[in-house]
Image (cartoon, rainbow, N blue to C red; front, side, top):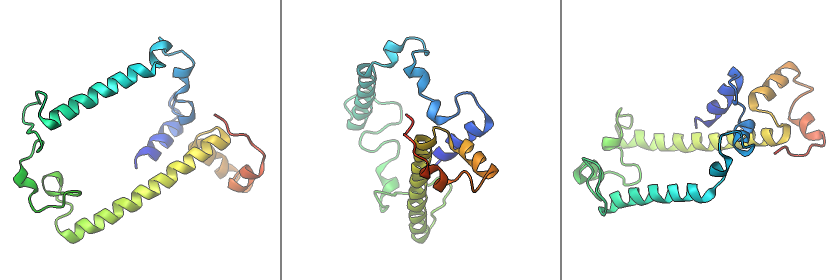
Length: 165
């Protein structure tokens, strides 16, 4: 849900490389040192498999775990979660006691689902803007504020454009 501010704020502040449509191009252009390392998918696959193997080894108790970790229970004892919902446990994971009652927890679940859906729709809008105009949301918003009737969704979509990748 923090993706939209993470996209808009760097672009609005003018941070170099802050426009999200331009972010990965430095790696594709070979300007990031050794492009053969960065473009090697097998290297990243090996790193990912190694990290997942370590985590699963800790979880299953087959690898030496960090201090305080109990296999199949994590860092909390089983009694801390007794009587709690296994999907949304609360208890020791509710640090600020936000969901003090089951009714509060039910309301927070609905709010989280609604905010997550809103965030996904906002990201879809950012992606469509980027593919249609080739600019970030802050630049598009600035152009719309300067000329609301000349630069909006209808006028942009009416012009024949090819997606910019």
